[in-house]
Length: 241
Ligand code: NDP
Image 1 (tube, helix red, strand yellow):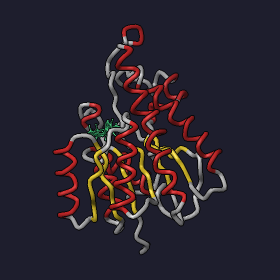
Image 2 (image 1 turned 120 degrees about the vertical axis):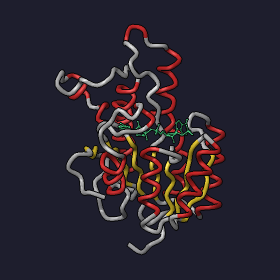
Image 3 (image 1 turned 180 degrees about the horizontal axis):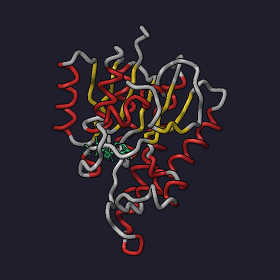
Image 4 (image 1 turned 60 degrees about the vertical axis):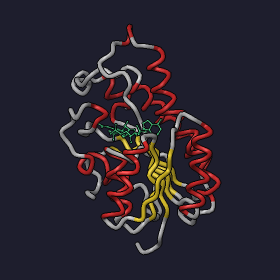
């Protein structure tokens, strides 16, 4: 694919987001690296540039509307518009807390980041995406968001994450609502639902690397071919990177 596209990956200074930025950058696309931590974001952009990726920094806190609006201006100025938005920023917040004792502030923070953060960023980027010839939005959800899995004792053997799992269930529902609204606009929006991946998020308890566990399916959902919308890609069984 030779067309130069611009992608914004939120939460791209480490973990799945960083590897996604690398993977999309390897396609020759311009990559906005969005995250809060200045030093880690700077280092991530430097590493990507060393590998030949046309990357730029996007200071971004998805829980802060002003920050999100400033990020949109940076993407417009440095990216020249936007073709692909990967809503990857996320927190677990409440690993190993029990439902009856979960801290409400933690619960609020998880929903604010994992759900409302996606809404804030998506809405701010939509005007640019509408100008793209093949706009794509990928929401990085989780297998933890599946109600079927949450109810299955065989599947539900991992650490308890009482706010995290429902936040991803809600993100899936939000994705479907956007897909309905955007139908016919040319903007395809999907959610990718990785299983356990070894990153800081879960204290590296996963067995798969980000490339094995998430990046190939995220990439598949960003390509400018005709594709589905409002779909959940489960990570297992999706084309390798
Ligand atoms: P990491 O903790 O390694 O990375 C999280 C990223 O999100 C960081 O870049 C962090 O940067 C950023 N981030 C967090 N809060 C904010 C915020 N308010 N604004 C902007 N950026 C933010 O986690 P993973 O790579 O594992 O997770 C990435 C996504 O993948 C998450 O949505 C997660 O739920 C999902 N996922 C992860 C799985 C796993 O097993 N690891 C499995 C399934 C889904 P900074 O703190 O500098 O802002």
